[in-house]
Image 1 (cartoon, rainbow, N blue to C red):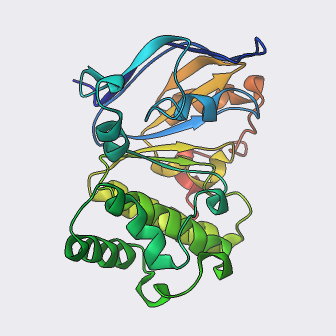
Image 2 (cartoon, helix red, strand yellow):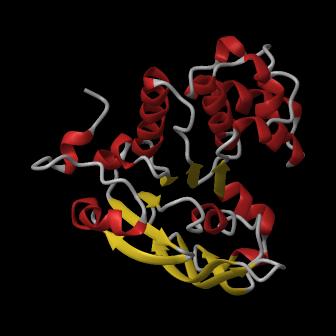
Length: 249
């Protein structure tokens, strides 16, 4: 059975704009799925339905076979979302306080929160920054902190919205390595991007959104050759294969 599924998922904004329309998608546990599409194609709108940040106009999201509306708190523990702009996600005055925010809101004992914070920061290599302000971190470290904050909730599914935006090459490599470690540890990964060249070689599935609809879904090597018709840059040069794209060489 799929870990998360959308059935006829549709979102129409109050002004009548269609964000997404009749999205039917199943994600199995342990998959690494890329969701790609041009700006305005509905990728982020779709992602924000997966843990209840947006409520559908029509359709539903199932988590482990149950509608997420039955228990939104549990859904947000199981489905972690790392936003495109980490600064919009930060609420803590220090790195440690930022990671502690989620567990504290679950009313966990202070000693358990402290243990979770230390473990989450260690996983992303940020332990030595625990007393610093999130605002002074580099772009790559801010992304790592956002991931740590999500990890503190012990999610099964991690959604990353454009995680490479604004990062230089070393920053991209850092975040890509972190994502691959999370996947290897058993997390289901949904990665939203229009920069396929940075991550396509590592994914098992490529999903394309276009004008609010899901228009392609399959193995990356099968789907990638049609992406330009949907406003996504073709990442392959003539004769190049998907597996040759890896930035981790």
